[in-house]
Length: 74
Image (cartoon, rainbow, N blue to C red; front, side, top):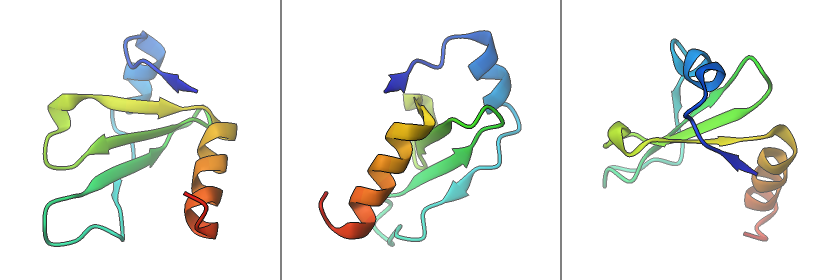
């Protein structure tokens, strides 16, 4: 589930979020950043153009995505 970042709750969670750049980011500027939010949701954004917005994921879909990436099924 992807949630929009329009609600005030999400906006306040994103302010001061602990963003981390992906360790898989290369030198070709194909980078993303991730932040674990206080609500348990996860935020992802494009490092080189943060104005494109942020995708917010509920915990279960986020963990399913991470598991799929790790086990190679995605």
